[in-house]
Image 1 (cartoon, helix red, strand yellow):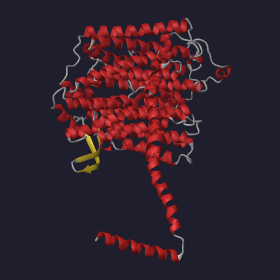
Image 2 (tube, one colour; image 1 turned 180 degrees about the vertical axis):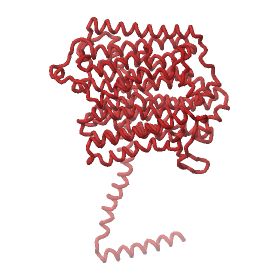
Image 3 (cartoon, one colour; image 1 turned 45 degrees about the vertical axis):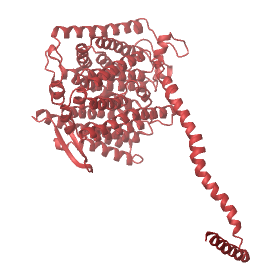
Length: 635
């Protein structure tokens, strides 16, 4: 079964080709069926490979397909790596991807671009699978760039709206900044290790000294790539703007695929980062800073999708915090649980928006609990999970990260717990504003309120179940478990584990840390309940002035405005100068000058071509005389 791994990306590619080429002739039902079926087939093969790998004593297989680049000492095979890390990512990408495809058949049913949308979705999954399966950094980079391209196409899917098209361009450009760092890192990896293959780089790196300058430089550049793709400070502003795309796109990009690529890349390169402790410290610092800043912004947002977008940025920050303290398993554990509850929350938000006739402002919602009972119950499960309350999935993964952070740095742990409290507050705030109190929309919206069709609610139910029980794959020993996930992933992180100290907290300390984080989340949820349910508080309209701190948060700390002033406008002015002065007056002036000179000279010379035979004879005689004179004086 493992040798059939090439089928996993092939199925979505076939779906893209069929739906893309037949987008003008195939009916929507056929396109939706083909698009979903191809992902389901990939999931089936991924599941078979997972069970085979789990039962096998060998935990890593490289499946060569063909030699792609061969020039001198450069050899880049097109081959796939099947190991515990890639296998779990395959299940996440294809499993969550399939549910999003099914959901999209209902959500996008009335959209004129339905067929094109499904072809883009299939292409996105194809590139994400390439990123996950590649056995070297070049194949990973192909997938890395591919998901960047597809995100541009999907975020700007409704491109007739100028702001949506601008959001797509913003995502594309900001990702390119990070991608440059990743690309330079690949060149340095080849020059240092003579290969881009994981199987050749990692054993060589393991023999190097901790803190080696080249390793620090390489990991720093890899981290720059991860910052761009996984939306960390300072390159995070593209991700909230990505809400311009259809809601299934938001779920696909923000839950299990594109934004987790940076975490996957660092986890895959774990030995490089373990031997570069300075880079790991930067990863932890950037991660916690991003988690707190994004959480503070989410506190005051009124667009339901924007709340979830900043929540994603914040949760990604927690994953980077875990990576930065060496908790590779904990960080990847949070990738898995986050895929469950964040996909659920985004798709649930899409169900709300669908029922509210495309309304996204929570100030115009309220009282939807009775009308959208399935959406409410599933989203509440997702909210409890992301808030880190037991026994739902988010509790186990977030607690594991915070436990490692506590052992690594007590101050970081305090800030991390504070961030977890903010998460609980803004998520329950979102739920209470949306589903509790009186309906605040228009009579027309109230008249059309209805639960979403089965194609949308069934994926919600499945994701709700996974959000509720998914954390048990990482049940820690302190709670009577064996942490199956850590055991399964141990071959991937074995070398890093041997070079670092694992978690050494005693059980009483672990219980205390769990109790503090749960108590903090509960206190934040209760505070949100009293403010938004008991006191029926509704955020003020945009026309009403806000207190300075709230206004700062509501306006996203003016990051976009600062970037525009510091980078966009100066670069626009510089490009305008180069266009008007260097390009038009200089380069074009020089080129056009040669053309004008030739034109003007030809106007004079053409007068010599009079057609008069006598004049031509005169000129010939004058020329002969001139030659004689020249020869005479030369002698």
